[in-house]
Image (tube, rainbow, N blue to C red; front, side):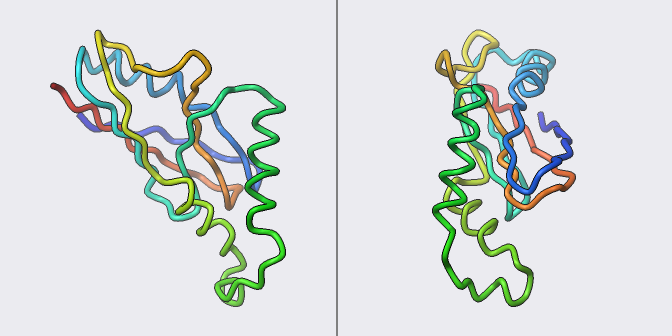
Length: 132
């Protein structure tokens, strides 16, 4: 089963919690055991697991911005978003999560986020449920 989550970001760099939407898709699938594949088909966004706490989300975004600050990226001569492409590749555009008893196995403080790196934009996240 393949589903899609659509979101609109409001900021250039932003973390958008998609946990509830992913869990709803899992529940509707009826699959009890298997895998949940999350993939964002964009080269300037990523999927991140982290705690949904305001200060931590700000720390993530500040940290990522600092990783790419002070560089004269060649791609910026074309599109001025080299930082977004590089961070997307660094973080990754996919995650695979185990599914047991109809529930995604994740830590207490692990929520699932779309990481926007070149917003504001409309984004989609592909959710593939793989049955054991």
